[in-house]
Length: 201
Figure 1 (cartoon, rainbow, N blue to C red):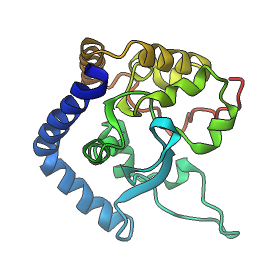
Figure 2 (cartoon, rainbow, N blue to C red; figure 1 turned 30 degrees about the vertical axis):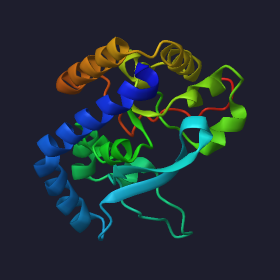
Figure 3 (spheres, helix red, strand yellow; figure 1 turned 180 degrees about the horizontal axis):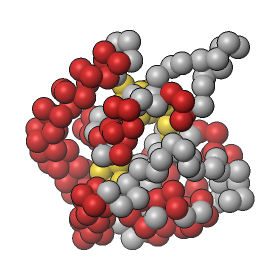
């Protein structure tokens, strides 16, 4: 019952409360990034959601669109701004995803939405991560995030999918809050990016 009804109710109540609480921060960051990124404060990207259905994820745009002489985007470490780095460090870049939660594209808790290009690389067990809505935070995020291997991350995602419950979600939310407050592995530096998933790692 929780998975199919009350989880959505929890998502709506908590996301609305968080949007109200962080509205001044949201407005301030939007204005700064609007000025800094030539009128583009948000980053949009198509991601696979529940049952691999496409949705547009929304994040604060922490990097510029600077390109080299050949028109290719510069490396992340060269495009991220000081303010953008701060936004990432404090995990503020994730705030706009509360809009995705309100729309029903995402949940507060669930496997993180990755890229469509990874789907053909998943085995049958790993594909189960798409049986629930993706989340802003998840079991893998509070157990190492980018410091653990892809295989371990997917193992934790599936563990969540199999054991979804109210108390499991509350536990993950509280652990997420703790990690944000102590800045423990919340957002890995762009100077040490997570290696792309290749179907083996």
